[in-house]
Image (cartoon, rainbow, N blue to C red; front, top):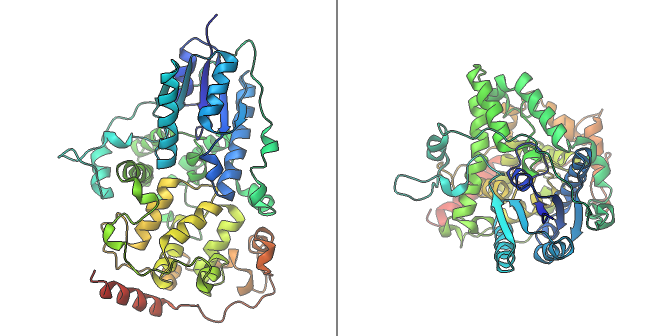
Length: 471
């Protein structure tokens, strides 16, 4: 009898364009898909862990419809895989690669141990458009600035997405945990019920999202993607981070739209490559996820007290800077935040409030359903000035002028901040249902009369700090 093959799914909850699953199926052996709540998953924040669980459940349903199933196990990855090999007699394990330091350390240990035990262990490229090490400068180094990185790959051929494979089932399935027993959403508490209607979970939802974007919004994407008051983005970050759709699938859809003359298509392709660039940096400079990318920033005098009053107000959407507060509240209600808003709240925290980017990065890791380790780290360091940005570090966003430009009629601010209008929207009121009870906030609270740090004061304070450090 043919020994079965284990397909280890992590952030690739899809049947279409899944290289590891296709390779496992092409072996001709029975395939046993497994999801493990392992040492990496256990380190996730509340919202990412909960959303990962939703994705795993949706993928289990997808596999069941294809006459397969998803086995759930909890524990250290290597120990769970070794147990499955022992139980099933499996001769190989396949998975799609991840590139953040924690995942790489786990995967390298798993591959080494399995191979030493005579088990075939194969990783595949399935999370990005281009593998991080395949893009090199003319001198053979890595790129530190996005624009030349984009120019290096924009004309490259991208392999077509793989079709859905036939998945051979084993004669006997191994035992499985019940994912509901894991309590992956426990830390979300009452917030889960508020955020859940805003999530688009699973492969079918992701494909529908991409189709709607290409059909209706990609033409104006270049202009509308920064508008806070317009639904002008693809919304696919949630699905890409969980692999419910592949980056290659999105690339080819965008390339077809570009060939058809749709104006915003190239900008969409650039955003997909921006995601690749984040992983390019994480691969070559893994310290970006935990310390300043630019070493000269190590001694910068940021506030590092996460319990400071200004940080508390920032987290609670009570800074008095309405556009910043609206963005934070959007995150608590939907689990996501508009990309332009992410830049504004990050700039306000790191520059106006002079608070370390690590505090903001970790808070996003706790709250975002589309949390991505590379994009989150690079985005925060880009905003703080300590990261990979061709623009000088002394750029300080003015939240008031940004609001005038990207929310000219105040629609976004009214949608999320209940206290500034006599007739709050349902979304604004939902914020009070999503937040921790310990915050003791209510719609009838008086909104701050003035920002805790004004736009002008914050800019002055930041520039003085930069000057004093000799930057």
